[in-house]
Length: 226
Ligand code: DX5
Ligand code: ZN
Image 1: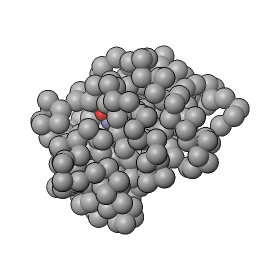
Image 2: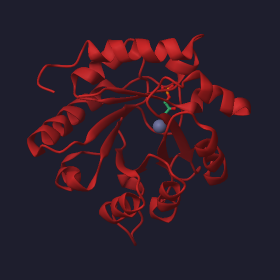
Image 3: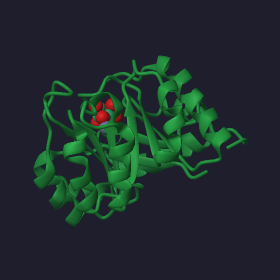
Image 4: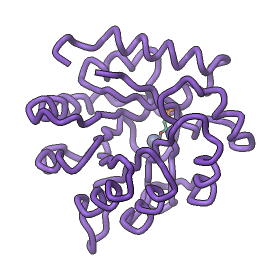
């Protein structure tokens, strides 16, 4: 099972996004947090900026949509060529549903990701796993970088990890929030395979070396059964 490190550019210098992407060229994907100030109480960047990031990034983009009614925008991020587009289960509007949004992403050639806030249970979504390429278990409340990892989300990750193993599907399990040298092993041990890290990577003097370091720490905690 490949382990992936996706640095979150939320913690990078927004005045120099292209050169910041260059600092993490050895990472797997660049994690881009799109926030709308409605689903979360913060506003970051949107479609025109991501369109340019897609053109200049040395690595593929992992889009994390923290926006209401993702059915309206998610397909467009897939169309611009994003490798992966993740939307929140809690944000899908009444006129749509997670499976329809996921299908609209896959039809456009992107991997489809489903994100769950810390308080959202995995159980109702287990039967939808065949429709998704990734599930994102938020390890902080979405909205801001630099928060502390919430270990109480690990039972949910274990449930999902077991369900993915039972299904035989190749669904990636992503964690996002408070991932650093001290916490990445906890998440890896519970079954995460894709690790988003913002402040831990971009706060390091050598961001690329920190990506490699995190990858090694995660690998040290993976059990043989995966
Ligand atoms: C938070 C974002 C995260 C954030 C993680 O809502 O989804 O991607 O950038 O930042 P750190 O790694 O600093 O917790
Ligand atoms: Zn994120």
